[in-house]
Each structure stands twice: as C-alpha cells, then as structure tokens.
Length: 240
Image (tube, rainbow, N blue to C red; front, side, top):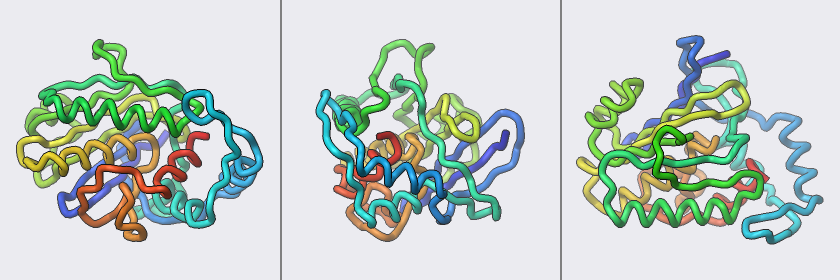
C-alpha cells in the first residue's frame, strides 16, 4: 500500500492529503488520462437507470465536459509518473463535528449533507453525536487545535485555513479528518465555502482546476457556497 499526499491550494492555500499507514511516500495529484475502465463505466452509466436521492430514478447521462472535468479533479500525481487510482467511500459515511460548533456552520453542514444525499444513490451520509462511530471528523476551530487533534496536519496548517486527511487503500477510503479554520477565516461565507469544498473533496475528488470559476473545485479563491451543475455531474459520476 502507498501513502500519498494530495495538495489543494487556493488563495487561502487549502491543503488536503491521503495517507496509508504502511509507507511514508507523498505525492500531489495532477491531471492524467481517464482510465479505460472508468471510461467504460461512465458509458454504461449513461444508459442505465440509477436511483438518485429520495428513491427517484433517472437515466444518468453525463456531458463530455463533465467527463473531462472528472478526470482533472479525481486522478493523477504531480510528484510521480505513476497514475494514481481513484478512491471513494464504499460504505455509508458518518460525520462527527468536533471543536467549535457555531449554528451557521452546523446548519450549513446539514444542508451540504442533504444535497450530497440527493445526488448520491450508492451510500448515505449522516451527522452523528458519537465520535467513536465516525468515519469523518470535521473540526471547526484553530490550526493549533486541529494539529493537536490530528498531528499529521502539523506543518500544513501554518498558512492554510482548510485541510483534509484521508486514510484508506488504493481503491477505498476508510477514515478521514478535516478542518475549517474559524479563527483566521472570519468571513462566514468563506467558512461555508471551505466546509463545502473540503468535505466534497474528501469524497474522493481531491484536485482543483482553473476551468470553471463557479465550481467548488476551482483552483483560485472564491466564496462559492453552492454546487455548479458540472460539480453535481462529477459527484454523481463518482458514486452513481
């Protein structure tokens, strides 16, 4: 198994990385060609009925733009010539919130989870109150507080207000932590943006791109607090 590092940078230099416990090799995602098996799955998805949120059934048809964008935000390695495998959650995701819990961020988290459950048909995401049962721990607070909670973040939060760390193997994600710095990032919309971006990327879409300024995956800094249409397609492409 490999340990690999994925860095997502905006004006606030948001960082995220994947880790495995066996090897200490890091790498950053870059663009790569879409793998044949994923291309075939996308083609099949366009012709199959899938249940999407709330029991609704529809034919999933993905645009060429979304397929290309998926390739950019889900695959690649900048620090290695190897192609990295795309990874996602194969089981339901339970989220526990630690640290500060301002009402506006808790409300935003619930809204994001509801939107994701409406887009994803294969797993369910929920917010829980028992940390021991969590798959993803969301930390709201200071960089120092997050460093103390997850020491793997030390050195990455010095100049960065958003971060996620995911554990798993080459194909499946199994545990993660993430944070939104509520001390240095004082604008509420900026905090909401960081929460949506980091949580969405922790689903297995860790890269950024300059292609679509309205996208939650946009490389430059924005305060986007909604998914664009192409974001929704990419999320559905990964999970449905």
